[in-house]
Image 1 (spheres, helix red, strand yellow):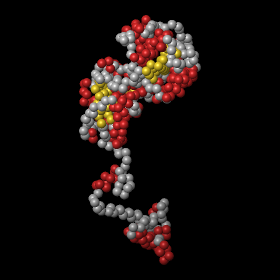
Image 2 (cartoon, helix red, strand yellow):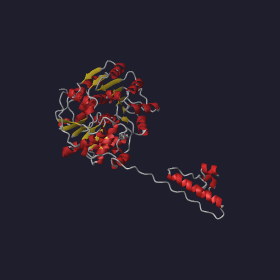
Image 3 (spheres, one colour):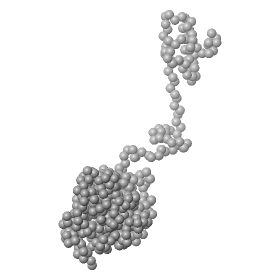
Image 4 (tube, helix red, strand yellow):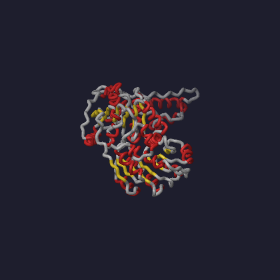
Length: 495
């Protein structure tokens, strides 16, 4: 079996590897390090978690051990799709280069430009960056890529999923044609294969079989979930997740909960916190300082539950995770193996539970086909899920659609309540009779004829009101309305 000592690495690098506790390289490391040390381009195809980071970090440190960086002109470049993965690469670099005098800079979003500019101005040997932030510095005139000797593209398939391929092509065009390129991807989509054919020169192709089976130390299970109502699916699914966690008890020391969408990550984390479970979200839309604080808390054990999306959790190395909960069935079968691989690491035992809804059965079948194993079904612990506590807000509890009456018209809840309270044959409600208009006070100086006409007019109005007619008062005239205005048409003719 190959040992690190047989790979012609720098003695100082070997010393750091031994201090880190490693002796035997993984298949991707044993295949990629020798051609990388020879200066050849390398195309590595292997899944995340197989040791790809060390397969390019170790030869890169060995090659850069001699020489010195110039201001604003890094000697090597590592591109990563996410901030967390870039930060992890930087940590690996610190681990393996601690006995070699090399400098590095980490260019990721969510960090001040000023701090990054200071590092670049001093000159760095290794530049680790996400594509967007790297191009921001280049367009501001703070960075030159003409001195890059070694360029690494890590997790190229994730770059494709996140829409970074145009940026990658532009960055390639800014680097020297004579550079050495190390290109790593879990899959070889047509777009990625086109890039490798364009920018790599006679690469050494190292392909490690994709991990299609989960570790035997991981206990798997799935709950086939069906909501009582479509508009309550999210609420009942979150109640089921909390019940699964409760049933694990103290055995669930910590757990990663995977969701397919960023919005669900936030909702699930908020729901868990509401019910007294220590949880925090992590996804690409959060501020970088908050994401790093959340990750540090989970690694140190001060945070029990990490609710994550696939992009944010890709490539993260978090040891001693007791449980993984798949709140959503992953869209890609390979992601299931990657997700549950967060637990049961280094020979430890782990447990992975998944919630599968009716709409997820197609993706679930693809997972079982990939791992060539039937995942054990677990009975729904909430037999009467309608009685489960709800985390809906009062607004969410309102019916999303108004009910329809027998005539087909929408009716509100208040209308239904009134109608339900009525008898089968309700008595018609009589309208209140309009009040009599106030009679004008008789004035001493009013002629008797006018007084008589006013009385007749008033009696005529009362008769019309009794027959359901309407009052003929003229708006704005008040009690001093001229009497002739109040006369009916017949009375005027008779007069």
